Image (cartoon, rainbow, N blue to C red; front, top):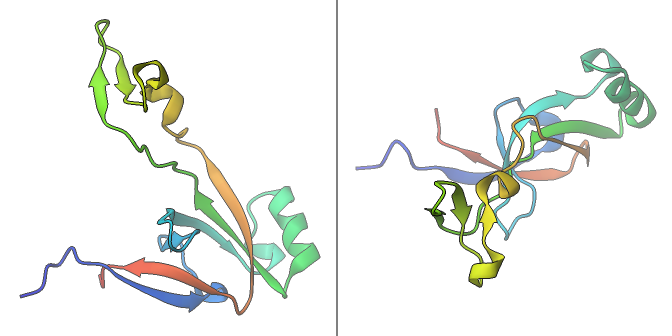
Length: 125
């Protein structure tokens, strides 16, 4: 019996990426980000900056925008004042969760060649 939550990893040409795909930006390091925009032509762009970028690189490259969520690599605890903190290597290295967690509007913009293979994850849904 298979688990419906199971995910498989595979590679697709960047030109075939879709909004919602999960992309590993650093294979081997597991930096998974969600695709929020794929721009192949100037008409696909939602801003003048992206439109200008696409105009200068299309059709050789695909412009892809991804979430920018940094992993939190430590446990969370609450200090004496009730503030959420992330454990560091030493107590003096502990940081407030608000200093470590990514902003909710963070976006990364990448250029991929049209034929570059990109690692993606699918749950088969």
